[in-house]
Image 1 (tube, rainbow, N blue to C red):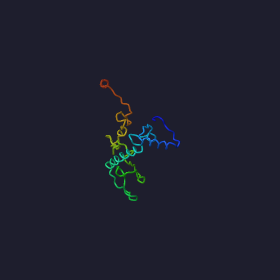
Image 2 (spheres, one colour):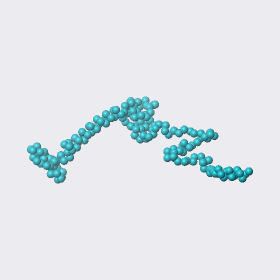
Image 3 (cartoon, helix red, strand yellow):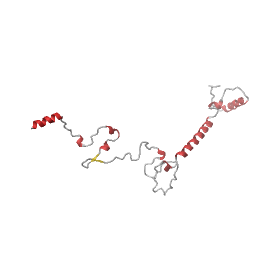
Image 4 (cartoon, rainbow, N blue to C red):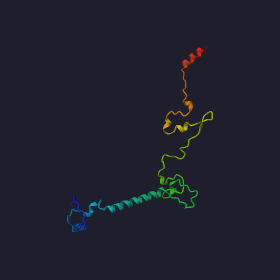
Length: 172
């Protein structure tokens, strides 16, 4: 019956055979024995095989449409070969004998990283001095006021227009 579990002591094979005989005879046995793990009429192994076959055909179709494999040069002929695109890696991993940063199947590559986005222009002020403001004002500092030169730290004495006129009048 449902809810009753039998212990495996070696005699379960004879009980399973009896259950099968009762089912074949049209008996109204409600014990399932081995068939307790039946999911929608299939045993787990059959269900897994069916799911894997459906999954493998769809993934193979996706892979064949996504990546066109380039032939990888054989060893000793890889002198100028630098893998940069997904097609360069074929269906496998990186080439350890080639000493550059490699991202097979784009694993580990930053999606937001655009080529050349880390290059900053050199800016020069009116006197020909290099201005490092572009370097300092990156990322989170882009919206902040950043003092990058010594003249930014020297206090400026600001006077009102009225005071400056009075000072000029006193001098005369």
